[in-house]
Image 1: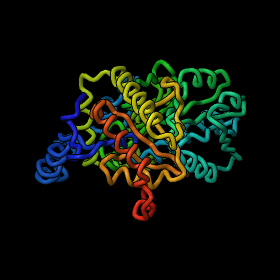
Image 2: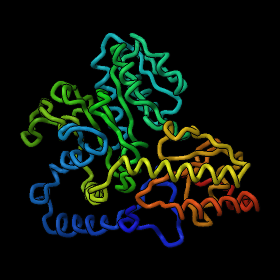
Image 3: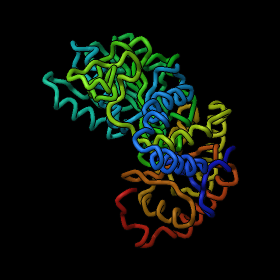
Image 4: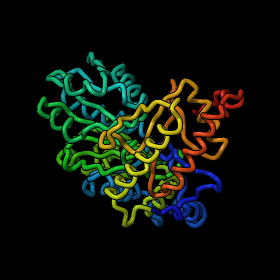
Amino acid sequence: MKKDLFHIPNGIIYLDGNSLGPMPTAAVARVQQTLTAEWGEMLITAWNKAGWFHQPGILGDRIAPLIGAQAGTVVIGDTLSIKVYQALAASLKMRPDRNVILSDTGNFPTDLYMAEGLIKTLDKQYELKVVSPTDVEAHLNEQVAVMMLTQVDYRTGRLHDMQSLTSKAHVNGTVVLWDLAHSAGALPVELERCNPEFAVGCTYKYLNAGPGAPAFIYTRPDLIEVVEPALSGWMGHENPFSFDMDYVPAASIERMRVGTPPVLQMAALDAALDVWEGVSLSDVRANSIRLSELFITEVEKRCADLTLLSPRDSAQRGSQVSFTHPNGYAIIQALIAYGVIGDFRAPDVLRFGFTPLYIDTDDVMQAVEILEKIITDKLWDQEQYKLRATVT
């Protein structure tokens, strides 16, 4: 439990770290240092003096142990959508004789949007095949170029078996791309053992680096010097400041960099990663399951109107629990008004994230008591809670 390392507003129980992690208290001073002592005093010389240029690789090496990867295989920068595009495009180049991208209905929509956009830019007739999460294995065959999945379903919390699916995809010669947006920092991830070609993820959820924080991309060690970056930005060049007219990729994970990294957000990420010093992800996972199980038990006992959407077996869930209710949006808005922050996903899903770094048993029990009151007394049934905001 590291609750004292986070800024949680008074009177708030925060069950939405699966969407945006709370601010680490150390991030304020770290970003302030970057603003004043680095940008303010060093100006452009901070790229060298403050080490800004090398931060994407340094931070990538700090993320690597959290996802079961070696140093030198992860780099950060750009958004998750860009990293999905990069990895997917590189994957397709590795299987030029195949034309199917296999994904599932539990994948985050932006991953599917990026795939659709990439397909439209290519001459070859590719097909994006989207199936039920439980049907992915049955659709693996020799026509599938890439299996692109999010390990934890953003809506239901369902957890894919990464090792099993990766192994079965490889039997068919399929390239594997995992999106770790809802698993990095929430549960042990073992990329090196599972052996996928690529993985991507964001740092603003369970890694708590703040809104707009840069994404990361992992490339399997044997591919790093041969993978062809589709987005050949100057930061991925072997010598960016030679300003050559022709692109030559770096002979390292640096080739997966694209544009200028977000320096202020890297400072926040640097501070956020300090939280993980000495933390066991196995312990995080065990406590997350304990809190989630308590929440499910108490909600089902007290709030019969809610229906569990997440898998009942904790081994098949990530670190979130989802329930459904026809008036889910209004219920979540009422909860927020009463100091419990969860979130809503269309059409009727109430989502709750359980992050043991700053959530404990007392938080769970208080949240359930407030939820029970809102349901029992129909406190949600007010126009102010039914008015849809832009972000749900």
